Image 1 (cartoon, one colour):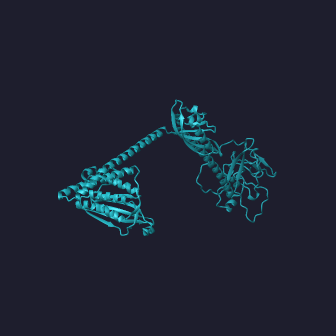
Image 2 (tube, helix red, strand yellow):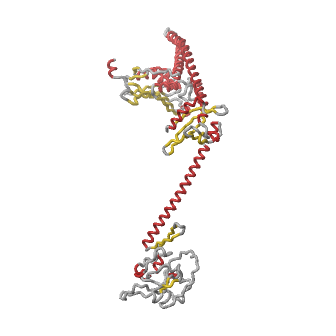
Image 3 (cartoon, helix red, strand yellow):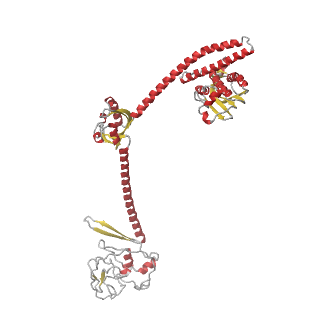
Length: 575
């Protein structure tokens, strides 16, 4: 296109060329180019016909089109002076009235509209070059930069592509671009999530396949007819059949005929969605039998039972060991019972002549012997009493171990029970140079119910122990009320001494039968080691507890707590 009246010359076809990738360059101000003179406000308005103003003269315009920014595209149409027609360069470039841009500027008020479906492309840059740049820059100086341009390809039914160009102002272009970019990101995210889901499903499937294949127990699945659908190598090892032979075989063929009714009932319960666990015997092809524990659960798909999932564990060795332990325990119980019977018989046989010896000694002491004879008779009496206590301990231990020991609840005065025990051991303590004291709680009731004989036996054993292992010093016996309830009163009896004491390691063995803190003590202080064991058993039989605290060389404290009943006041008044 040239000046009005100039002859247009056809342009050679433009060779196709690839546009090099655009490099980002720092934004820098460009000098304002000379354009058509701006129309003043008082100048008369031009007619509605389009007026073109070339930005470069025809003599300097290159054949391929102007290289300036506003003239990057080839000329599409050129007005012919006086005729109102345009001469076209080519059919492809003349497909629009104002589309792929001649190097002219058009007033915004007279800019034509592109024909739908015929324009190949139009960018926001071309929109800006089709209007007066001075007016645009004057109206919006902060929007110099083109803000919106989006191109989208749509595949047609015939296989070709139709290019739809969406170009807008600064707000509309950005909004549409942001929306399409958001949809693209959502599509990519959905594709990534789908890939991650598929990868996770594949990993989960491989994990469960490995768990099924390498599980140490027999894992299998059955259909509703009871036939094997899957089985792991452990199932083949338990049954004795290879996996290939197990598939399709009925599970009932593996069990002994006597176990078939039990297996059918369990399978019916599993199909009814009730998990089952049973023990059965599997008959192998070689004739051997394996005891297994089978757990079966239903396989439910879409609310319907489609099969049975089972896990079988070989329990042959465990059952064999359990039977051996049961047999050993039964033998030990029989031996213990025989021992208790023997000890009871022997103790009875020992107690009968011993009672006669003690009675004869007592009569001898009352017959008026001289001092030397009296000393000899007293020694015989003390030895007889000691032997009688030993026999009583053996009888009590055998009765407790055999489960024949009982507790008799009778009315008692705990003050009197403890005082009698202290009085019994006081002469022995004084002979050894020990001080024996008794401290009773003033709030201790005088009327209680319990087994007076068992309480006296426990207190006597603890006192005898304290006297035996206290070379010098003192022994203190205390009774206090720990708790008072409407029907019971919990009392604590303490025996404190200043004896040799025991270590923490020795304390763990003190309450065992025939055991003492140190084996060497047996030779020095004597004793059988039954006293504390019997005390523990008797206190537990009365519903109480016993404990101790000791320091080597600093003495020991033994204490036990038992609940004693409180009699009805009306019964006391009636008595």
